[in-house]
Image: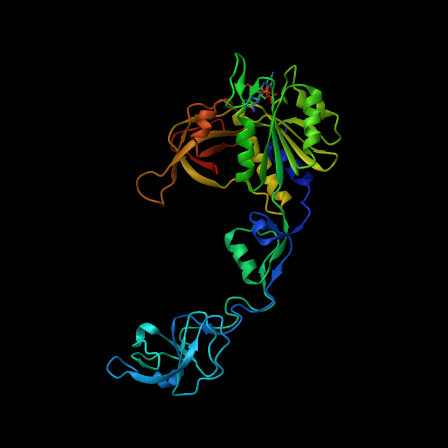
Length: 406
Ligand SMILES: Nc1nc2c(c(=O)[nH]1)N[C@H]1C(S)=C(S)[C@@H](COP(=O)(O)OP(=O)(O)OC[C@H]3O[C@@H](n4cnc5c(N)ncnc54)[C@H](O)[C@@H]3O)O[C@H]1N2
Ligand code: MOO
């Protein structure tokens, strides 16, 4: 049997990096930046006011106080978007709005709240030092500065940064498009009737959403019966829209494990037993040497755990992101657990903060149903307790690492 690490490192060394695309800013959400982006101009591009108020020479208002306000003539208004007024001489001032360019000669801004708000003359009731409420050119970003490095995932703040440096399009590695298909002749569409022996397909819905949660584009393909030519044909049809394919079912020791049968002939396909529970039967390969295919076990909890342990890091690697798996948090067991020697065990658990505040460790209470068919326990869990291969028993109170579910 392979270890979890061996199987994962085989996958990570094989998955291709997605080719960069130049795409419009709003379409780049969730993609990873393919090249560094530099600022063509400083930000802010010019000195400007941080407040609505008056642009003054600080020396004029040095002695201003509520008892002895300084009165100055107002020579005009500068709005955001205006070109700067050319000069403020000592003894004069201009009304100025937040974001408007500082007039030459003025070296401080007095907020309107410190004045009587006059538009022809203004009484200023407080002094301010030079530089007061002025936002200097380049104090956010210098011209030529790299504002985002390659490999950054583009979220709201990063897209805001790109727009702020004037980029309308951006070179990215896009979100991987992943087709998810369930195989199994017993499977029926949710919403339809089932006959004895049949069940509703849950894996393809669950994994299409897991792909989205992992930052990919998840497409669900209708289930395919356990018939070799149908399975092969469907996989081939999907290659036009898929950067990766996930199948579930048909990879164990059954008489009709067709996924295993039809893909075994493909060059790089490898089916293995991995020393983990759930998720022992795994398959991975590259179709036509290009498109990664993950053939996950059919049991729903096995498929889900396999996704988080192997597929999630692989999808990140395809985008040039660090191939991290889900974050783990330390927790304390509320009850004893046992685990078979030699396998890595992922136990569904609930996490609670004990009374006593945020700095307390989580308390991990393992779910009752740990079978790989027991979706109810998974759907009410918020983590997976990771029990290492050499551990057979952990008492209540033991410290464990828990993978937090998205
Ligand atoms: N003799 C052995 N039998 C099995 C072994 C083994 O080592 N020797 N391994 C077991 C383990 S572990 C797993 S996991 C499963 C994996 O089997 P397959 O990947 O071939 O999956 P199926 O047989 O097609 O299905 C297993 C189980 O899951 C249900 N299923 C399948 N697809 C879906 C779906 N889309 N939605 C909901 N439920 C699904 C299916 O009806 C079966 O009950 O093999 C064990 N057997
Ligand atoms: O290891 Mo299988 O993946 O339980 O259910």
